[in-house]
Length: 375
Image (cartoon, rainbow, N blue to C red; front, side, top):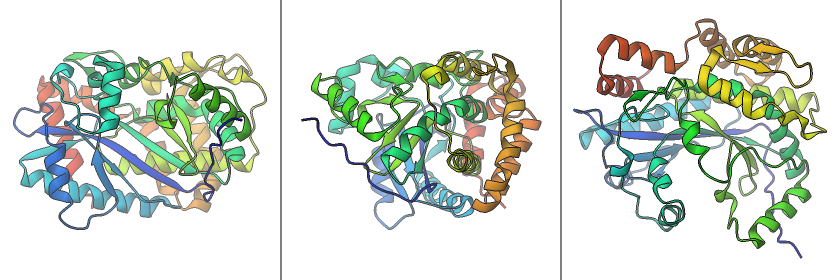
């Protein structure tokens, strides 16, 4: 008999955010060890949200509580940011967003001493240290596993939006990659990355997971590095394609946009009937990583080529009524302004480099953006 993978019921369309962040030497701009010291210092007194280690000592992860609205989510992210920055200041460290550090040397990274991270390093070898890249993960609540799986697959249509809007990793290993988002190329090296299998109900997913576990391919849901994966213990689906933004406000805006898109899909009863929705998935994903908001998407229904920025603006308009209901209109306004200015943060990083001719300066200015309190 197959193992039961119980899906915890949660309130539909609730959301939570996780951000993987860079720990930076405030003089050189390089990554530096500091996660253990930061966590030890922060844990001495109560703090908002959750702050914990990631796979290497040069990374740290923050996460929020469960939220229903954009405003409180943004406020909590700001409070966590302030706590983290104050602790980093005491240790003479800086914290930065961005999907990839522009010039760090992956082989110098140290794996954080936890059983899970040691297991990953033992299994994946050098890929584990190369996994020193930084993403934003957004969880969306679902009432059941049978509600989660259709929503997961319906969101495939919008994955290029999320990649391009959040793209913030043009530089990697000291060079301009010509990609707006290079981070996902690193993630794609893992064997269980990419998209989830086309299973549209929870019983089918339980059967799939049981087979994979019986074969010894996976031990838990953490072994899947999919772009979107179910998280049954939380009662959510987890969208993992966002680069970590340079500010917490942008992180909240991206989550607000995603929540509004999910609300639209739930309201319209979107339920993909065929795996054909994935025919152009890898191509569209590549376009968004490579060209950002200037990407051209293929519509698998009509066969037409669609400018990504135009598709985002059309989606924003369709989502307006849902954003008003969810009290996230401010988030959609920010997304619209970003697109009309063709101004994702990969562009900001390139412009900063053109001004300074220094990748270290790109990192240090990114850290300054991260620590800046909003008015």
